[in-house]
Image (cartoon, protein in one colour):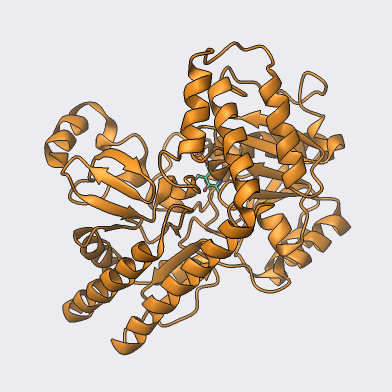
Amino acid sequence: MSSTLFDRAKQIIPGGVNSPVRFYEPYPFFASYGKGSKIITKDHDTLIDYCLGYGAVILGHAFLDVINAVRTQLDKGNIFCVPTENEVRLVELIIELIPNIEMVRLMNTGSEATMHSIRLARAYTGKKKIVKFDGCYHGAYDYVMVNPGSSASTSAYDGNLVESMKQTLLVPYNDINALEKLVKQNKDIACIIIEPVLANMGLIIPEDEYLNKLRRLTEREGIILIFDEVVTGFRLSLGGASEYFGVMPDIMTLAKSIGNGFPLSAIAGKKDIIELLSPKGTVFQGSTYAGNPISVTAGIATLEKLKEVKNDLYPKLSRFSDTLSNGIKDHIRDLKLNARVNNISSMFQLFFTGGQIKNASNVRQSNQVLYKRLFDELLKSGIFIPPSQFETCFISYSHDDDDIDRTIEAFANGLTKVKNSE
Ligand SMILES: Cc1ncc(COP(=O)(O)O)c(C=O)c1O
């Protein structure tokens, strides 16, 4: 069934998919529906989902509190393009849950949020250049597609404006000396944008004090620090990476978990910066769908649930992530495989390499053929991890002990097959 659907799709949709990351050889499975931790495919397979809309579905698929709230709102209209009370409620909730946030503008996608936060930084500082890190992914527009991660890392960039991309300076992740050198040589830097945990090059965790040093450097040099928390916001902890690491950026971008996967994103930060957005300020940003009643309703229901269950949810996600990672590491050791696992909070990823994984170059050197082989084996065992090594695995509130046990067993089986194929 999926193969027939893919045959139809590829005739009329470029590559048969509506976002490149979704394609893998020979063809992707098509989803029929999702419930909790599972996706049920058009081929009638039930898969435990560790992709979760690339991190968006923190509560689980078709989570009842969110779905019921959205159902009620659907009867009341889905778009007005005039302000609604719920927009104010949602922003009040975001400000309550994330420390030190004063003002928020709601948008639809992560790309939009990062694009406008860079524009804000340029307007605020009067400077032009931006710094990004090798392997970080911030969306699909010209000046952040400079060594991006995710599926963009293996793509060509025809049609991008080279002049625009030249405004972007690149440094390796986890290397504060390289960054200090770059900043010393360039006096025209408006902002440094970073994924505080790099989730688009597999999973790369910031070294101790790295984000603190970054904060001190940007403060000293008058550079705006943007945390792209599209993945980490409300996932790493209720207050995201800034709360988790105790480092406050000037601007943060939020998406994915904010609405349990409904199209909803935000730019958040101090009032004097965010208020530069029009109509109050001079930085234009607008969208027909921004703050639409459906996404906003999903956002309120999601954040209220996260707030209600936070003392159960975040420790549980960390426990599952540790149990899974340790279980996988045990099998790696037993099989004497050249592989390692990185994990933090509800995120984990495996790399086929004997070396450490602290930047994008390390990830590129890991064995992606073996990763795809493992992906294929796991899929056969009913486990769905991202098909690409350049993505991260996620856990939701709907996963349970049985899912975790079955997943460790499937990894044992998959890793044995990979070992035997070497
Ligand atoms: C860290 C990060 N920033 C930005 C984006 C872009 O978000 P969107 O795909 O909603 O435009 C993504 C998407 O995966 C992301 O992971």
